[in-house]
Length: 85
Length: 215
Image (cartoon, rainbow over all chains, first blue to last red; front, side, top):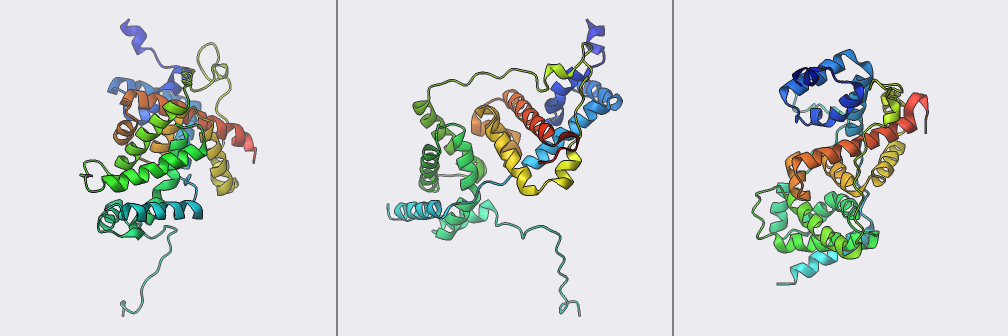
């Protein structure tokens, strides 16, 4: 049992741990096992870099601009609320 | 000497935005412009989030308007235990959920597949079709507008629960704790949704940009 747990990760398992790793949710032993796999695996290292890049690019996605119509509607809404008393 | 020679260095960043706390203070003081500024800042994100719960844009716009009214009405009672953004988004999600449940009764199919297709690994679990390179393409060769468009439509293609988590965590850049509170889900559940959502976005980027393909 213990031996099986210590066995090295394979890539297919490693990619499923990427988010837990980035979220700091892996226990220390699991994190070490994951990092040991990365150290010997350029493909999984690339995969992790791509997930990080995906997150960075998502952060650059801006919400759509307010249409003049929506701005007018919401300004009206504000004025109605002010007059609610 | 130095006073007459201001050093203006343009480092590519915009001037600092007025903080939510400042806008809140002005709004409480009855400043309409502060409300407009908040609307400018959050309306688009709120619409996008609402769309994940309700069937149409018209309904989403209604939910967002209701939310703004609830925010105004709740201003005096808002104690600031959470950030203004977290509070507003919580109101939005609750309203969108109620409306969504009323308008569409279909339950989304659980998505439990692996984050990378099993066909890309050999029988030993090692990559047989490793990730294609695309980071350099995304950084250098693709026009920013095209990339944003690509990512937006990839996000629209995510199952709703994954889309909500990705929007809040990665687009709005909110903390895990705030997102769990807004969506009323556990940290573990959030991680699973985030994992699948990000994995699918990565796959879209690889498919579109991998190996020197350009848009």
